[in-house]
Length: 118
Figure 1 (cartoon, helix red, strand yellow):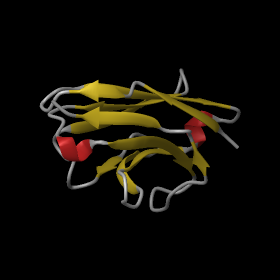
Figure 2: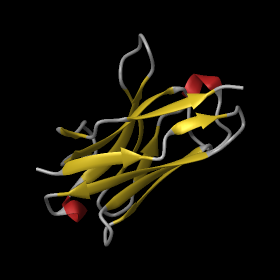
Figure 3: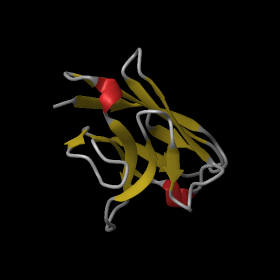
C-alpha cells in the first residue's frame, strides 16, 4: 500500500494560481495511477484529474485548460497546477493512488483545503 501526503493548499483570489503537491511513500510509486479529487461542502467527492504510469492524463471538463496534473517518479511526487481559479474550485483536494486508469484507487491522502475568495 502507498501512503500519500498532500500540501500546497491555501487561500487565493479569483483568477489566481496554486500548485498542490502529493508525496508518496511505502510502495513502488511508478506502478500506481495517480489522481486528484476534490470535495466541496455538501457535495460528493469528484475526480479532478488523473495520470497514468506512462503520463497519460484525463481531466474533468470543469478544469480542462486550467489545471495540469504531472508526476515525478524519481521523487515519488504528483502535482496539480491550478490556474485561473474560481470560487467554484473551493474544496478539499485529495490525492489518490490506484491500479486502474478507469477506476478510483484505494489509497487516499488526508486532503488539503483550497479556498478561492476575494
